[in-house]
Length: 224
Image (tube, rainbow, N blue to C red; front, side, top):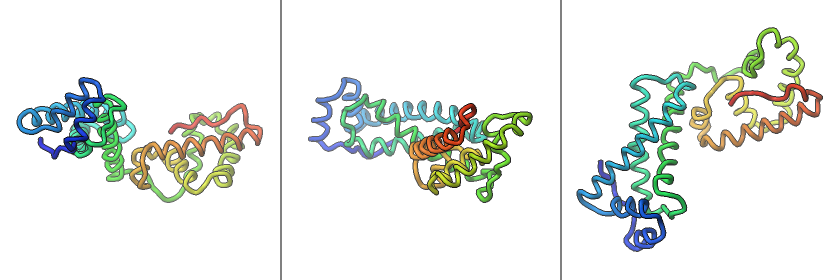
């Protein structure tokens, strides 16, 4: 499983001198040639596949993904992460262990692939907003929903009045429609961390609005 090395000789020498022994060995072998490099690439692929497999299994339940599809996504993510790592060896600065650095490549590839997989058959209508589902999304049973009606109305007003258009879009998709963050990131052309940051800011605004309205005893308990 070959890929082009990405370390220039001067860069490699400088980086090798500044990192831990294990990371230096990874850089030396991956930046080399011949059978030794091929063996290093195979070892790196095994590391990335293990990370991708664990990450896929952790996120799969929310995406209705199981069976052979799990392994397929993990292998695709590991293969693409391998290409990305070997192409960017020159960007490794030794601020963490090499294996810690490559971990993020596998996780990013898993996020992208799971997000795209969701939209093949999402089962989630992107148009419309089913606000009747809101009590259920916040964990209230039918007996509590009548008591919760005023809060739900206040929350909907806050969503309309306090949130930016982007915050509203992300809040509605995640809370009302149950779209997984990975899938939403793909749909919006952004990344998972940006979705979480926007959701965090939206929740903070909504919580403040509910506090101001006197709904201190309930607050926001939504899932993301």
